[in-house]
Image: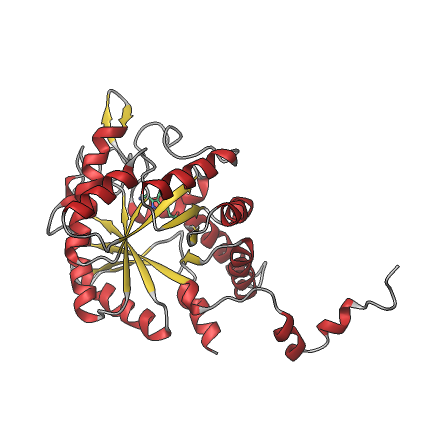
Length: 324
Ligand code: PBG
């Protein structure tokens, strides 16, 4: 019996005390803001399932990224929406593809911002799968060739961090080797190492128009029921050369983030994905929850679980609050 000697409420008496004993903090440095970039000019097209998020043509993207950087956000991640899609996603690895041009323009305007690129062909293929399709199957090794070509064009355009999100086996090794052979040994790889086959990607697929046209992603993304497998995936990606590993989604996988954090000693990123964002926005628009407070609680929970950085569509709103 420790009461009345120990009264935990002593340390909750005032904002000053709360600040002193707070165990987890969220900083603007933790935030990575995702952007959707499309062809054309003057485009700022709202995504209905993601209030506040737009598809932007390159010049609008650059001005948005400038604003994010001025708020203190250190990094952005780019997703491309090409004007044409084909069987092999050839727009993904064209020297003058949408992402390649976007990187150049961003780096021209704001050289200090860290540009991360998503490496995966699903936004560029007409079937919407993350790999080469043959007889209804997604081929692993044939896909590696395309991914490494894509990664190389991103590196050549000036991307700082390459983030493969396809979940093919051996992609980190292949991309690392390709980058090293071409003089890009300093480019960082942030691998979507534990990426689950999640329904929380729904709004993203509307935004990027990347829903699979047949079947699902369960033959390459992970089963949400598996923990040990996620640790194997993470460790293997580190062995293959990943500098940073990611867990995705974040909220329903806080246990995975925590486990990964304790098993490895590289930085861990977590992706607070589109569906997690949309749920908060929808409930908040209905007046069912206090959107701002829920947002901050969500982000701190991801930090508390052990993430060192968070990819989140809330980046800008959170940065504004943190700057206050
Ligand atoms: C694949 C990719 C996806 C997301 C990030 N990279 C979609 C998918 O795997 O279907 C989802 C991100 C989100 O939902 O916010 N290019």
